[in-house]
Length: 255
Image (cartoon, rainbow, N blue to C red):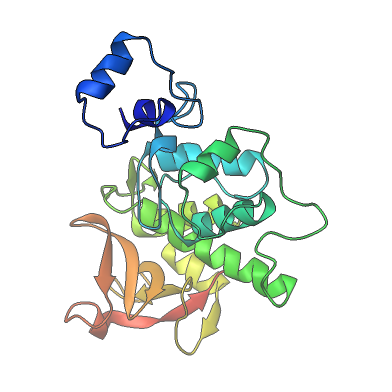
């Protein structure tokens, strides 16, 4: 209604008053294509996606960014730090305000001759060095992928989004980000590099039903980790609670 009123030099109050009704009866000017979203655009182009969102529209956005070289992993449907960084880089390369929020202007540009990644530069080129950038991007990808799996049920021997056991979850998340790790918790322990205290993206290990490393999860900071627990499936847990603290064995870096 407001778009129609603007196109016909009426007060754009969104109220169909006498002047607006008269213009409608007289076949007033249609709103321009810039005033109304095109029917061919995805539903997400009428709103905004931002950090923390989780839905199919995020999946579509990630696939679009991936086709242009900005998003370098499989779509997760979760708008995490990796997605926000990819959106910022896309916005910078396409002359948009780089706020990391996929709003109407970003979706419009995605639908209208978007510029791909500049092959002469690296994505997120505000990092001081390529090695640091790659490590940071991998860690962000691991956390984003792990968060997207929260709520998946526990399954003994499970290695897919239909169900995970603890080490199957670790193997799947790392594989999604291009890193191959062994299958069992003990093998993952043996392969990893020991660290004195865990950093985000490291794997923390626990001794539970048998001697030695028999359970693990991905450390996400603030003494929290994401794991596939036998009671509630993939969830966030606190390393300092009364169950996990006395069972903690140490942390390993697998990337």
